[in-house]
Length: 146
Image (cartoon, rainbow, N blue to C red; front, side, top):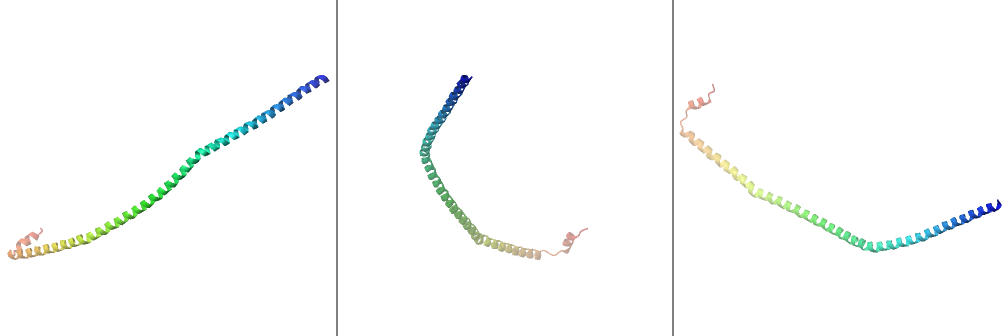
């Protein structure tokens, strides 16, 4: 039993040694693979940075140009607003002057014409009533309600 137990112990020791060597090999292979992957990732990052950096620079320039154009557009809009406001004020002033210069004298002329018409009408009434003989009966009959 002694020999057989020693044999089993030797088999267990050899299999433990093989497992330990396999694990160490796996760890070494994993470390090597990690280094290779890290090196490739670094290279890819550098390439991406080299390729993307010009795009970032262009986007920065485009953004600055867009900001400048936006500021110019705001200035132009403000100038247009001032111009339209000024034009509207001038139109209002011109219309007020025209109204005062044309409409007010026209009203006065119309009032004068109405007064003249009333005067002529009054004169006509006065002359027609003098020519007719006064007959009180006709007027009284027209006013009779009955």
